[in-house]
Image 1 (spheres, one colour):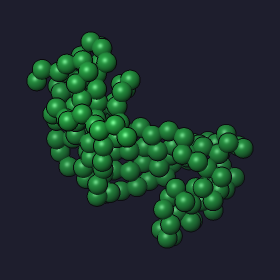
Image 2: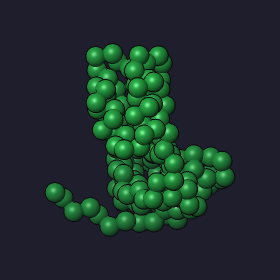
Image 3: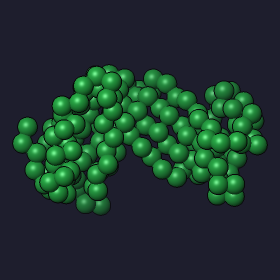
Image 4: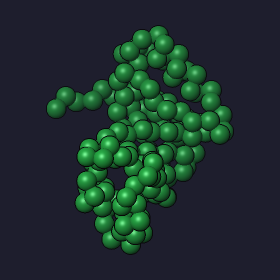
Length: 146
């Protein structure tokens, strides 16, 4: 595939259950972090390479094999969509005084995880995407300006 600077591409996993999202939540008072890792049946991101290095990174990603993860580290990328959550895990980074209470509420499964974490003073701080195994890339239409 001919990948060009400034062209928008849709990147998605070749196989089901290979699109992973890690959303990190931070409590500003305690400076503690909690991660919520979700595995999706499918999803996509959009990447617009800005220079030759990013073009090469996208070309190299096309050659990745089973067991390798593609993590979009591009100047201009955005989350497309993800659908049909397969699993969700909560990860505590460091010691948390409310870990047991958070874990209990999470396991009840009555609320969205983000709502539970907000109750304990955590706000979304970062989002990382990992596409495992092989990827597919196709040219995407330009996004309409807001």
